[in-house]
Length: 515
Image (cartoon, rainbow, N blue to C red; front, side):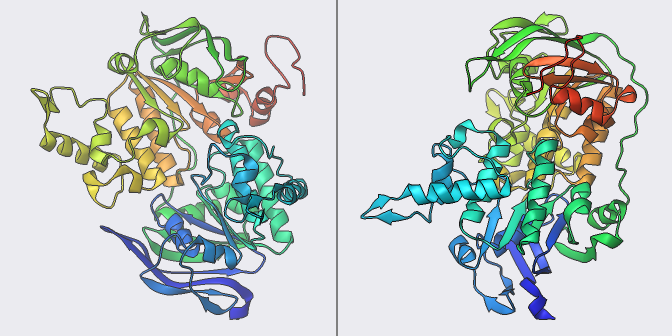
């Protein structure tokens, strides 16, 4: 019966230059359910939700709310209909406070002056009720990614939205924050709110969703009840083939020391303490060493120090025996270091450049790509199409696609293609599969293992404990800027790692303080 559905998107078609992002898709959301939307990178999930939220207009199809057809021309229309959305890349004003971001667009005024007292009370009441603790006066630029997401959720709740869209909500969260978010979503459902939940993570779908709709390459593949399906069946529907959910790798054969970090000290940008406090470790040819930890324990700054994005105030970094502690980034790159960065938009791509320009960013000066200081456009394009083909980078207009218009997962694949194809001695990979679907994760894990098997050193930084256990030959746990333990993944458990990551244990014999 139609009245069981709070939202119906019927026969939606949305096109962009060179690509049909949504091709005759029907999605029906029941009142008070958590409905997952699953699909590969670029399958059209975010586009479909952007049509529902009024960011895009569909060329064909209709949207019904409570059985009646509605027109959603912009996000204000969506909000009036009780529809809210947390975007994959947050829509926050960084120089505003948390409170100002939450009330932006729906401010109360009196005689032309903002009335924030009532707003503050409502925000604090909502944050208390749903366990979304925030500091209303903190600047968004100073808070963690997990905290920014809470702000986005509070924005929806502040507007009394009943239909909540979460676009990849766990892509940037720690395991603990993901568990919290799942509980919050279950709480929303109990209150009768209806949730649309875009994700790639099959375990999360199994944990919280009632039903799941699968898209593949812009087409509707079907809707299934979670109670009567498995992760394997979902991944096959999504990718069109069986996917290995664990990586196969032969035993590690470690060779010469490629990276040597000695007593490294790096200051923090946000407080007076050092973010990295005297860290030392080596990475050898032919091994994957993983730095694990909860976000904000110095891993980001450690990578910035090693790759040249942050100044080092103590200690040293050696690459193949050469001191590169203060070397420029281009020199590190030429000396054999590749870097898959944590923030693909800030450090991985020039978003308004084309895909082909991004793929030669660190090589355009080589003889292959220039002659007499002039770029050889034909060579760049040929090289770009070779990488696009080998790494399955999907884009609407091929090599000339503007990077900004590509899906997040395909932006990530482009960076990985560029960094791996340099055939580095050391590959620093930070969150390399963040926001990727199971097919792409399987592929990238395979690439990292291939690099290791070809005798390259891989330094992996990941918050995904499954990934840490799956790929690593050695695991280093960071807590509050120090390495508090080193583990063999075959000899440890996720629970054991969790204790070290939370600061409850450390290997130097000192019982850690538990805050």
